[in-house]
Image (cartoon, rainbow, N blue to C red; front, side, top):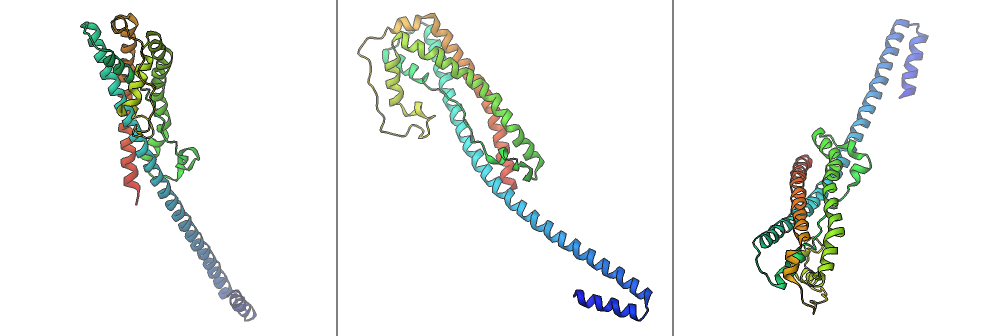
Length: 262
């Protein structure tokens, strides 16, 4: 093709047809430019198709991860509802001076063994910088805010966790109900719902109940108990309020993700 054009140019020059030669040369340049533009357009189209395909892969992975995170968060919220209910139960018992059995008190403290903490899946799409492949600006913004939203929620969780380690466990050991509460906890599937198996593993060992009597009345009248359960009630409710807000944001992200998946 290049030889063909060269021959035409040479013939025009030998025939001394300068004006026609110039017109032809300009036309040839225009054809070359058009060819380059077409090649660039094809290349841009192919690259765009690759980006779209990559985006779809990322979106599908994100929706899978966010659905898993949502299920986990709902699980933690349900655990805290149990903590809130049992805290209210203890406060009612102590305020009305109600008599309960060792087993009932052990069941209450077994609930306090639950230590719900949210540990979401961190997707590589956000960490690797591939978020720029996502075209939807609303989705991109929501995903960008995700880390800070989780961090704010986790701060309240950590306060509750630290209280569990530093106050609740030592109190249970001191008043002598640790073993009995531990026995109930491992026997009750609904109290182990925060585990990966959701407490369904039936091959669970227990150490049995203590042979020593438990001073139920003394524990219920201990002034520290009211403070402990008030803290459990307060921060379980704080975490659930924040968790509900986080849940709504996650549901919105999932909704956008599903609308973007082809």
